[in-house]
Length: 212
Image (tube, rainbow, N blue to C red; front, side, top):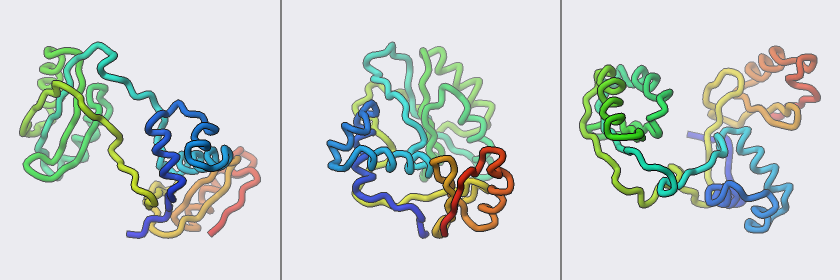
């Protein structure tokens, strides 16, 4: 599959610096990577707009906070019910990660609760009503390493989704510059529809230009 957005080694170096310490200023990252501060700022902005960077949030040191119970749930869900189960699990505060997988369990869920009692309550009140098979429930006793789910290796390709229809962009994207930012579209129709829905008079595409 053709992925329309390329991340070069500068992009991945910037990402590595942010993943190591999200508090770093653009200036300090620029010194580490060997580029200018405006370059770092524009690259980060582009990666945020394209959805590569979903959010910049604090990562807590588990050893520094009061420990509850963390566990990995291995669940087996009928393929026809996966989407509905995901819709119910995703909003729950106790659910920290969800992975679709292969094997005896096709859904892996990382859970964090305040106590053993709360964990059992979560299983009985949140998991049991979903009518899924609990293949195993493994309580985590110690966290040795817990990093991002993506490993960065030099140049990479990433997928984009259309800012109008939400579909995945499979070719070269159509772009629209809006208020200093960039929007991405899968086709001319979506781009035109976006411009019609958000005309300059409504603050949507003031001073906009688009490129194939």
